Image 1 (cartoon, rainbow, N blue to C red):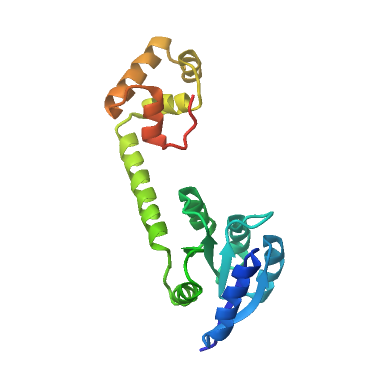
Image 2: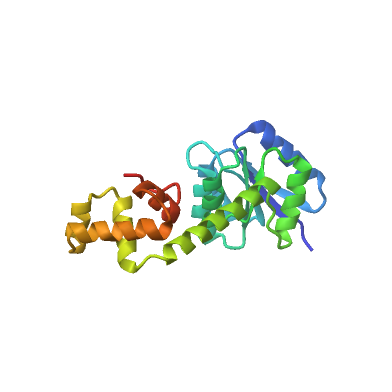
Length: 214
């Protein structure tokens, strides 16, 4: 079996050099290259065809997440492990949607990162414990939101979506072809079904805290 071919994309020299040194010292790994920017990685990685890319998220210019999103379609056999300083829910979710296969905090030791590279190559999906917990919480929250939305009729969902866009009752009525009073009745039913007191609570309960507030 050949060595696991690795590329590093990391703008901080001390982090990049530490990782590179640990890779060179490991008999199972081979460092193909190290890049400081996503722009350079986008050009070279498709040519090198590494097994694993260790990718910093917060790169200058094109971000690590966007870099993965651009590389993944043309490099389906390459796996990407993200490194980040922050435990950011949105970043975790976006990175995974972009095609990332693992997600570690930079507070992990180089030896832990190297072990995770091997785990990723052999079929695992390594994640820092705190990141994994956040991911579970994200999916649980999404599941809860889907359950909440299930109690609403299709028309009530339309009305709530219009509310989330900041539309007034009259505007909603005009758009949906119903009267002002019918809109009010739908909204009253929505509040009752969701057990909320106002539009902001209703929007948050169904669409999440990131939804636009009127």
